[in-house]
Image (cartoon, rainbow, N blue to C red):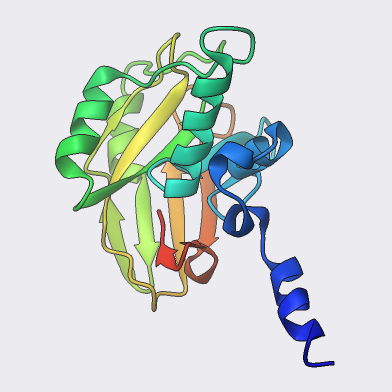
Length: 190
């Protein structure tokens, strides 16, 4: 019986803990990007995918997609160079929540940018944190990237995001990520 316990523990582990990213199947990569501790769909109607863009498993999944499909069908667009530069300089003090926008969405109508900045919040326990900035979606990279301060600690229960998403029907969205589920290779990843 004692010999079965390690086997059962191993089988209970998610694939991202058991295999390196280069061995993830296309279905597993899609799961990391759309339905994992770091990503899920949100909204009553016209659901959109939100994901922790700076979480290592998400970054691994995106890198794998870029390597495997290099500008062919299914290729993932390169992120905005300004965004990549921002991450290089500010990763230690901020993290990014990505929101995949539908291609036909009119982002950034007059006055909506201000609502995005004022109404998009991160809630942890009793504290609210506003976005530090954002990178809007573009035709080549249809992801809104909201920058939040890196204030989450492993002891926190959950991160709740209250979002205003310009250009979408029902622009007010709320989503939560349980912090205990965001562990990857023994570290909190977000």
